[in-house]
Image (cartoon, rainbow, N blue to C red; front, side, top):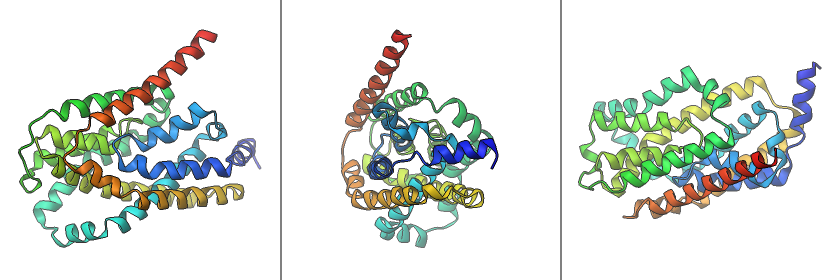
Length: 280
């Protein structure tokens, strides 16, 4: 085995089962709420000092794919009636809107996924993503609510697509960005949630499938199979158990509490970073 392979295998064995389980349980509700699941998976272990942070970056990314796979499967089951209804009503207009809501994020991921992961995945930049997303959500929440989702146009779909592209930055949140985009376009809160969900689910499925194929081809060290299976199962179960949260956000509720929570988490991260710099 090469030196790089040995380091990868050694770091792989450092993923404790309790941490894999905890991250899986966390991932479901964090994905369903506009608080950034990727930001939480990155920041909670860092704040708690977990060994997860010591894993090889490629292995951490692979574990996130596993978590998203569990979430995607649970969403397909939990929202099966809505997914079926949408599929049956799919016509040329809706297909065009779907493509426009998908294309910006897909193109940006294809061109810049690696640079974004390398340069924008630190605790500081993730905290910045939380802050920017929170400000966008709070501002969009103040817009008039006067449109229904059936009035959505190509411009609306493109706005959702741009929101999803922004969510490639860790901490921004796909859910939060698309909700903000829909509310900026003056959709009612309930319809903004439906539009956000319809834009996000295909992208989650496509990204998970593509990254899953890459992961399958690359393979995983044997000593992380149990941890990955545990994390995936926990993510599936926590998402399925938390689908009621969708209705909580969807009811005529403000995004302000979620924005405040994001700012609080970002403040906690920035305070930790300041203390670390002060020690040096």
